[in-house]
Image 1: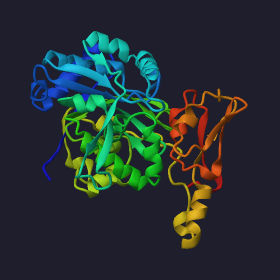
Image 2 (image 1 turned 60 degrees about the horizontal axis):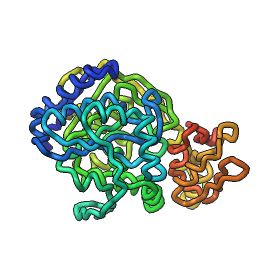
Image 3 (image 1 turned 120 degrees about the vertical axis):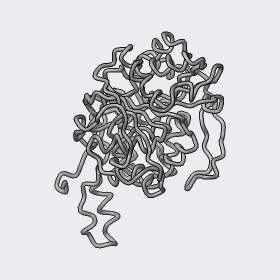
Length: 378
């Protein structure tokens, strides 16, 4: 396998000019912005716009990085559209709220880009997929000449880690994302779907906001964790290998990385990548994991009993009634419709829950916790 490159830049703050300098350096590491954007090209800048959260919550890609990428593409003559399908309902009202609160509305105006309000989506064939051979993707992807991805470094309740590969999941419109969770309920299948999707989406460059990441019960319920870097790569699988290793995950602990290694999409170890720019070694750390990792002794249990006992002991979402405001976002996002709103509070039917953690991901007030079976923690 040809040695693959990851660009690393020290980025201690989100100050705009510093972000622009870092983004230009990232482009230069791969031949300059002109190697990707020609005058008149329609550029899709796919950000992480999970929900309507302010930048300091570290849930979404910071608007300063989005602004800097858009500004650099505009300097090269690109026509830049900033787009994503947030979790939950895909409506103009949802998009408007998310753009405003996340800071992307102002970032787009300043950079001379525009925000997507086209709610359309079309099917695209992908015969190369191992598991999924077609996807229903939002219109801006179909209309783009060039796709850039701007992801956020976070831990994740279902996939352990989320970054470059999973950022492409936002190209699937609205409540079709919970449908994908329902179709692919087991983590290996879900991770393979994400890999097929990322290969289909084919971003030319992926930028990662690791200035402030999220640890703990990400992608929305965790805690901001400063790291002080921006990263960039042509290969999103290599970028995830590098970034997840940087925050303390072995390749086999992140299913998308494990499968990417197995399928030859990236090397086996981060040391086999070519890191250019800054030395990342001083930034190595261990992010707190999401509470939903495997915490059972199921491997020591007789075969016939493993499935029911593992399900009994597996982490699950639990509503904190004191914080719940009964908004219904969790119910709307549940792929198996196992959540109801009664008496102004959310209620989860335990027996039907598939533990995809979409409800925890989409709760705007962090009222859904991940509860472990305490007696079987390792």
